[in-house]
Image (cartoon, rainbow, N blue to C red; front, side, top):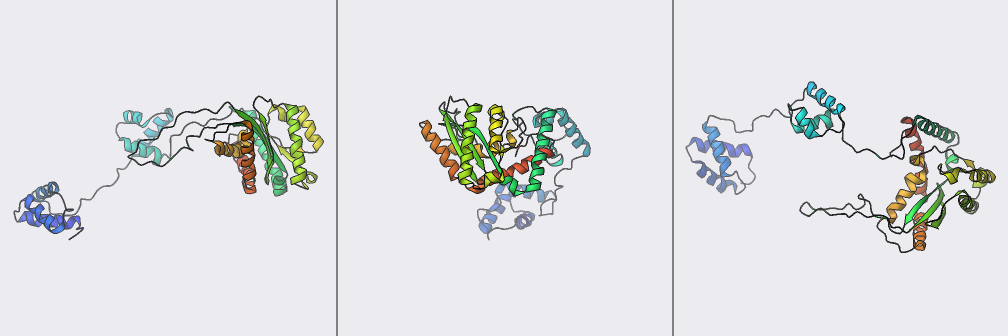
Length: 351
C-alpha cells in the first residue's frame, strides 16, 4: 500500500500499541505493509509514548497560526526606525527585545510597507531656483505639446556629445549569469575604460538618426566647432526630412557652454530654428542622456576595438541599425519624464 495518510498510520500504531506490541515490531509491520517510505522507528516510539500517556487523537493538533502583532509593537518599531533610517534588523533585536527578528522584519515590510534602499546618485543638489526652472520648462513643453500634438514632436531635433571608448567594461548587471547552488560564485574583476576614445556627437529626431560626427580624443568642442557640426544636421534635414525645414525645426540640447554660446544662438536664429529651453543640471530630461547613450554603452560593453576608425564605424552602425520606433520611444519618454518632474515639484526623475 503506497502513500498512506498520516492519520491512517497513527491509527494503526494506536491499535497495535493497545495490544501491547513493542514499537520496533510495530515499525516492522508498517514497513511490511506500507513500504520503506513509511514512518521511521523513532517517530513510531514517540507516538507510542503519546498514546500510552492517554492521547486518543490521531490527527495533527490545531495550530494558532502566525502570532498577532500588537499596535504598540508596530508603533515602537516605526518610532525607532524614524530616529535612525540606517538602523539594521540586528539593532532592532536589541532595542525591541520583546519580539523576534522575523516579527520585526514582518512589521517593517508588511505592516509599515518599508524597504531598505541605497541612495541614488544625482548630478547636483538642486536649489529651489533650479527646481522652479525645471517645473516651468516642463509645463511650457507640455503646453506646446497639448496645442500641437504630434506635429510638435515631429519638429524636434535633439543631440548631444558622448565618449566612445576603445574598450568599455561590462556593468555588473550585464555580467549576470545562471549558477547552480552547488557551484562557486563567479568573480568579476574591476576594469576601467581604455584611454583610447573618440567624441561622438549625435543628432536625431523621432524618425531616426540625422548625424553621427566622431572626433578623436583631445579635440575640444568649443562654440566654433559646435557651429560647424550644426550645419551638418541642417543639410541632413534637407535631404532626409523633406518639408521639415519649411514647417519649422525645434532644437533641444542641454546647457553646455558650446550649446548656449552667442555664436551658436546666432547661427540657430539664422537657420530659423526655435530653441527649446532646457533647464540646467537636468540630464534626466535630455533624451540623448536617458535613452540614446546608455544603450550605446551597453552595445559597446565588453568589445575590444583597436583604433579610432573602428570605433567610429561601430558607433555609426549601431545608430543606423536601430529602428525608427526606438527613436520615437525616446521622444515619447520625454513627455512622461516632464510630467513626473512637475508631479515631484522639480526633483530628479529616476525612470
